[in-house]
Length: 345
View 1 (cartoon, rainbow, N blue to C red):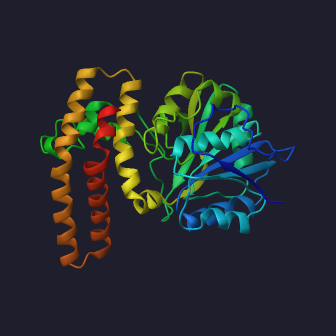
View 2: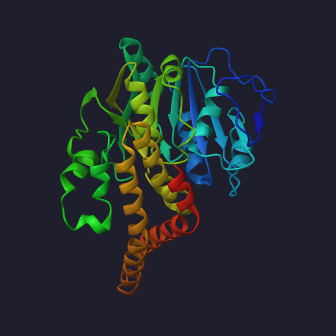
């Protein structure tokens, strides 16, 4: 029987009773897989197929929260995967809030938050459960992410500093003053074969005991898209180890959905960093300098990426030209529509 929930756009407290909700649990579910989706029908279909048509080794349920997709993704889930618990939002409420909505519906002892642009091998959930039960002091676990080419992607990082992000500002990048801090943040410490405590797991796939998720305060809904994995890793790390578990591998197409929705993704990433830095205790003066530099730098990058797109197109590098043009679209959306929200963050 198809189980769906219509969810209104107004906020409701996490884990509060929702009068519109219907019972959604298979009584023996141990793991609840929570997927937030927006306009990624094909990727979502592949993700659900990998979860539901392969043995995951433990009883589980799958919950999809659709953020008012316009590509028919929610109808596809309802028609092709009737065993999935489907929540249909009337607007795009963002990644964090959609994940919290899924957590409200979940009944498993473990929560597995999974991006829609992933594919999960057989027995992945069983491997996570086995590790979690053998290591009760661990509050959050992340797998090794593999790209479409089969090569490891960056699956964990250190916490960023304002200095690290200064390197991303083109007005400062040429100085190379902040390059070491940026590379320490992005990739310098990554070992794809480790099983070890880390500072930040990539949010494409994170596995938590329900109790650890609740102690961490759940996903902070001030993040709409970008920075929420930094925050959840930080909060979870206060209550136990955050562990990179390379014994589990998950295919992650990576940035496909964000590039397809660049006008939404790029501005919210910039705003997410401000939320993170403020919550991490960065001072007002440093945040003010960061906001000024980002504001001044955006039109510079807009011109730079526009010229890059034109050159690439004229020299026959069409695929790279499209990527540059998508960046231009995101920068323009940020400059034209999102600067007030950036400064208010």
